[in-house]
Image 1 (cartoon, one colour):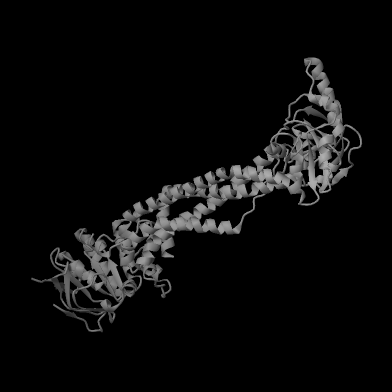
Image 2 (cartoon, each protein chain N blue to C red; image 1 turned 135 degrees about the vertical axis):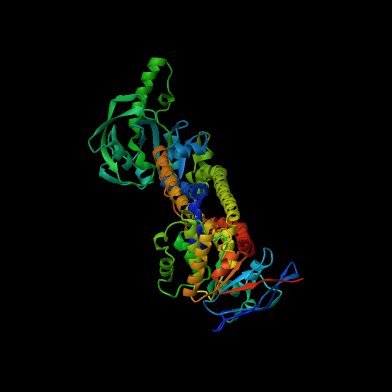
Length: 222
Length: 403
């Protein structure tokens, strides 16, 4: 299945085949996403959703195919260039958020810019994002002292800080109840749209499907 | 910037362990630097103390004891010599000036030294106030002694038998202060000077009293021109080669050269310096091992955080820098605390040495040594962080996403 947007694509994946231990095991359906588009990558556990996200993020090299983010062929970049590119143009949201407990809310969000070696050009970007996600009052609180819902919002803020072209979220709702799943998906989709980013959610959670525009299914290879 | 921020945040979270590493490291640094600076300053302190004394001529015995007793004034006399015999040897064309000294009494622990006005020439000392003695029982005080005893011109005091405070008082022989010397920075500042005949007069009287009580006569009675030693200042450095041999050739006299004896003493102390330095280095190594173990343990606990940094775009080198930054902060804090402890230890040593021996320790900080110490500390910190940082740089993003 392929998804084609009307604007020039910020994410393009063509003929991507994934391998594990040298053995091809899954194919990623072709993708072409415009800014603000949302897509869910679905399939049963072990079908290669996370590996596909790693390939899109420039972490795990696919055995075949081409992946472009914002017009740049990710896998043609050198390793250090790919790291920096990922930091600047790709936002990541993890299943268990992975915040740094030793840091405050604002420091966790700012980490995205610092890791990417990318000074924030937009004045007050951090403060605006914290306000947008209702985190301003918590900016100096350590993240091990905030609630689960607040931690979700911090993870989203961190993913969006550098105004990425694409936000990749890996099983963000797997441990959430229905209400929180709906709330997080709404937050992710809205926040990504406000930052002009496309959103790809890898999930086996059927509850997510209502919150995205398109659903694509991983294809297992024989 | 990121590395520093994270390093501070991580250190705050394990502040107890970090503090321990800092304390042990600081103690090691302080031990090494105190040993280096202190032992370097000690010979200079001794040299300042013996002033212009190039040679001590005294009775047969230990040359080091002679120097400690009669040049540095920190030890007790070992016997007596005939002033005439000792001065006969000292009267040599290569000698600038020589003066006999007679010890045996004190005032509140400050040594009373019977001598001749030539002693001032030996030390190149000048009077700050008053005059030199011209009668028995007139005293000229060294600058520190005058200050400590709160005595001024015209004041009287009573001497006590022996070189330490608390001896039998020679109440029938009150001294009058007639002069105070300008500070010289030498042992002279701690002495109370009087005519050598005054000491002999008092000791003859004291010996006579004791002989009457015990029936045993002291040898001062048998040696009317008894002196503890003669201190000599050379006219030419050539004398250093000749004079000790000349003196030691005499069957009754021996020579002690402060320069030679203190160098010999310092060579005896060298193993102590090495031991203190080794102990300091051991403490630094323990601190480094503690810091390394702490870093290794926390790196394991932080695998997730470090992988996250990689996922957010940090290069392996930038992630490795977090471990180095933590070790560098510990090293910097240990250096700062170690410097403060060194200052404290040296100040305590300075005061203790001044109180007990009168030696004025003036530690000189060699900037070359400072830079070597800083370099060494950061090298140890670098080595402590090396393995943890390599592990950190290999943090796996795949494992993070799949966890």
